[in-house]
Image (cartoon, rainbow, N blue to C red; front, side, top):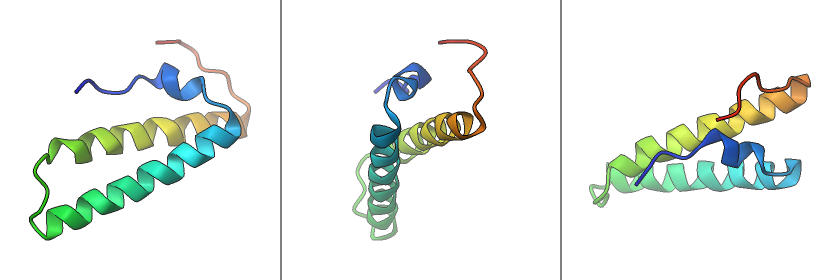
Length: 73
C-alpha cells in the first residue's frame, strides 16, 4: 500500500478536509485499540494513517495561515 500524496489532501475543500481529519483520527484510535488488544493483523496501517493525518493537518495549517505551498508534488 503506497503512502498517500499531499496533492490529494490539497485537492480537498475545507469541509472535506475537516471530515477527513476526523475520520483518520477515529480510524487511528481504532487501530491503536486493536493493537492494544492484540487483534491488529496489519500493523503497517498505523504508520500510513499517521502519515496521512500529518499531511491533512499540514494542509489545514497552511490554509489557516494563508500560505501557498512552495512545491506541488
